[in-house]
Amino acid sequence: MLIGVHLSTAGGVKKIIEKINDFGINVIQVFVSAPRNFNDSKFDAESAQELAENIRNNTQVKQIFYHAIYLLNLASSNQELIEKSKKSLINALNVCAWMKAQGVIFHIGSSRERTFDQVKDEIADNINLILSNTPKNSTLTIETNAGQGNCIGSKFEEIKYLISKIKAKSRIGVCLDTAHSFASGYEINNPEKLLNDFDKTIGLKYLKVIHLNDSKTEFNSNVDRHENIGQGKIGLENIKNFINQNVLKDIPFILEVPGFNNTGPDKKNVEIVKKLFKL
Ligand SMILES: [Zn+2]
Image (cartoon, rainbow, N blue to C red; front, side, top):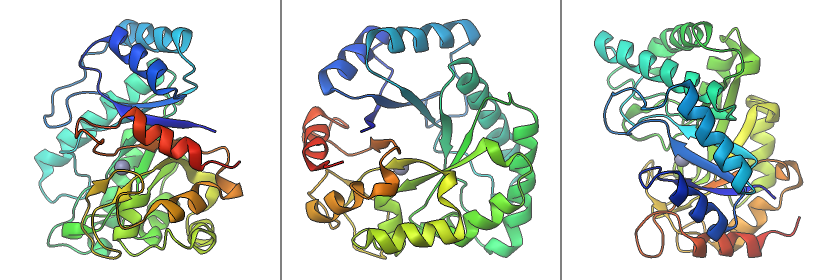
């Protein structure tokens, strides 16, 4: 079982290691840089390698993921924003390679007034350019979206199309976020059908990671609000059924829940999920 949480790196490496060991997790996700500005990451090759070694030597962590910043948008009509977004992802993929991390997870962004058909080839061109300017041992992982405000990636077909246009396909992954996909009309409560749909459109070989979150908002609401495991509209039984699907047994689950004290993902959520695992 690969289970982890999104962690803040703010307290330094000692604090991260303490948390990982206290939570009993073997996967982590961290921000590569502050998520609400375009400043490059504080890591250079040496400090990134040192952090990763420290984590791997002092914890059970087997997989490390990065989450890209929230501001980037590869579907924008604003060229300055596109350039900043590309630069930010290139920086993140370099850090990913230095740390031998499993991937950089990102949201494609919103096309605003334009349709998917109008932006799809621009997005694919941008991704191709990013991949051709970054180390071959880094992976860019597209996250499924809740679909609010014309955000791209809420439909599996959109992700399928983009992957079809990407040259370095072995460097592309997909992150299925249960709260987002539930909000965009995918039945987490019918996991056989959902995963079959995913396989038929995108292909399960691209599924690298799951963001395991309950949802504060209703099915098909297109509104993205994460909830603690078992406290939301997906519910404990459906989450239990979902995480025990045989095809997911080697896929890491990362919690991005608010936490029972609203301080971010906590040990209690991890323990709830661990009790649900049968595999
Ligand atoms: Zn997510």
